[in-house]
Image (cartoon, rainbow, N blue to C red; front, side):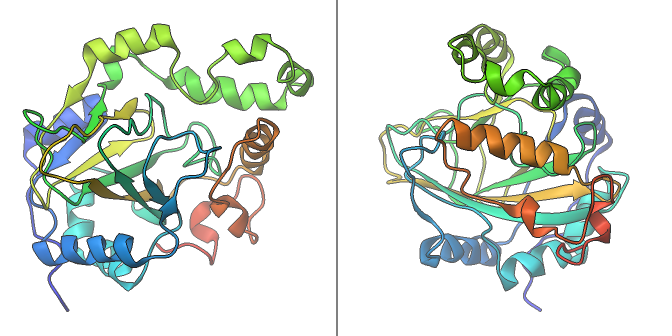
Length: 291
């Protein structure tokens, strides 16, 4: 088997930081071979395409449900599982791979939480993303990485719960058709919230092979790629849910209904592939996921 994942040791300081802040940089987790294979996955896949006008992120190209044998080799590798085991109590279940390409003058995503990415699990249940830049990220030059905010700076415990309650409210569908709803940021941080988030954001440089692990309760956004020697920034994101996470058909249906009613493009319908689950079942029980 090709060596795609390096064996790394997480320091006590990194463990404590992740537990407190919700994110941690994983230095040199991936080998050059792994990065090359992920670049090829994005470059050659027909799923990675020009972003439709209705898409909420300002990217050059994006592809959802993007995974192949390389992806499985990575998340099945003992070095990969051992790295996550040092930081996360329960086993994780791979759900989705996503490829992004960001060219200069594109803004990517505004500050958000991964509400849509994990719209098929209960609001309080745990999930994680591993963001893998496929080019160097230099905060002193072109930028193009991500900005993320420690959980303590702006706790998000009520964010998911509020939206879960809203989509079940008998008057919510009618409210969505009013002018007042246009002033409510359902999926992104408001302008006022952005002031606090920008004040407390962290932006790191990344070498090729580094990655960022963050949980679903961390506010984050893209950092625009400036003009420079890199023609674009490609990145690959791997999504995981906790083995104890439960299926939520209520949240899934409610969010998709809202997205479509606003004329936006969902781009992925992963949650609807879990046809062998009912509301409240463990995601790990589905035959359509990889444990």
